[in-house]
Length: 147
Image 1 (cartoon, one colour):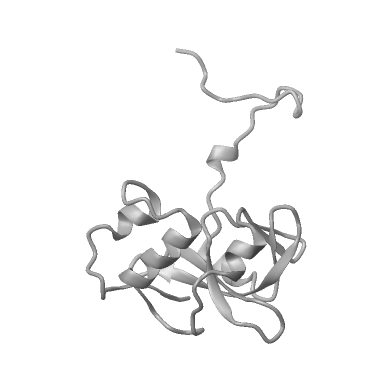
Image 2 (spheres, rainbow, N blue to C red):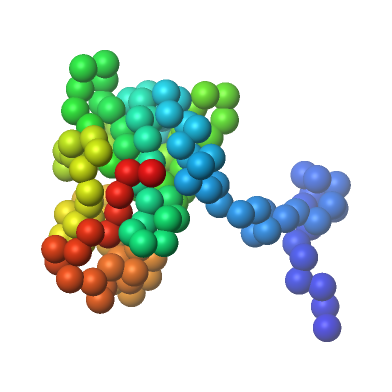
């Protein structure tokens, strides 16, 4: 059977292990507090203020972000966030993030509220990802909480 490890010309044929890198933990994401939140092209959107984790599993699912110095708070999906050099990049446009539903810091997320957020970001499919995790939960069930 052939080896399934991919190699890259950029790394000189050395196997790449991107698939083997575990996603950041809630504790690692909590350390991003105060980092600048940027869309992928580098434009600043706001600041990371915390992380929300799945209830009851404890896996990070949302980043709490403050829009502007005196602005409102919202949540951004944590699943594709990448951090480095005191910045966190997410694959969502600045305007999409800024128009996301607002949240009061410290409040719990219900299934209904979380589905609204998933739909806003276009990642709420009930067949996969977080949408599938929420599919069987009651509308008023707490699904995420601040870490």
